[in-house]
Length: 290
Ligand SMILES: C[S@@+](CC[C@H](N)C(=O)[O-])C[C@H]1O[C@@H](n2cnc3c(N)ncnc32)[C@H](O)[C@@H]1O
Image (cartoon, rainbow, N blue to C red; front, side):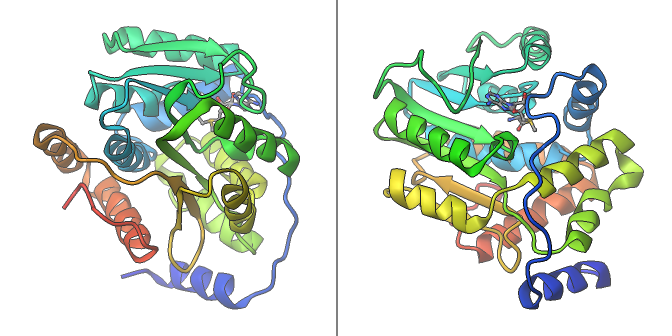
């Protein structure tokens, strides 16, 4: 059951008028060492990002089955990518990010996890010039598109995805959708403040202020990726996902996904289950945690 705080956010977002314009991230490319460390820490232990990383790792695993090579756009410290690569050892992954600090952290993490199916390249996700046309079996990107400075850059990124992805290739893009009210932004950014470093809450607030509208994502998907499905969390478009259909997934992988959910501490398992619920009502089928 949502609490009073969440209920007022839902009502305000459904019935209120849009209150504030998009505010681009002050640090588009994340290079500050403290900020990178806070971001890493929030995801790599049983931290506040654990539920989100596991949810998307499971969902990404469902769309990439049978692919040979997957590109992760703006992979950051590779916490998400490592989880996906661990669950899918037969698939090769290329993580792309523009921040050398992030790429250093990502390389070290992949080495620590002893994964041999991931490599990294420095690159700009709105200009993937080095990657040939129709060459990628699949493309993924998690919680990163709001780092693009303008809607025109988001459009360039969609154009690049269309150019690089093989026709019918696997796709999973997820990012925040813009909320209408600053009170809602502050509610989500600080709801877990007791369990996360302050710098992480600030980063979350900036991300929500910088996010694009759900209709921007849907419009670009319609123009450049019309064969893919757009889904968002019901009632409030906090998460917007553009994805290819789910493929058949090995029972062994599903078993690992379910036991990773069991291994989460109860408060993070609750966050994961809320994501499952809000996205299921939003239209997402084939729940891999069931
Ligand atoms: C919030 S992090 C997300 C990282 C990762 N995908 C995850 O889910 O944890 C956003 C990342 O986007 C990167 N970034 C921002 N603008 C970029 C660009 N134009 N090209 C490549 N990477 C970019 C930043 O350096 C940062 O690592």
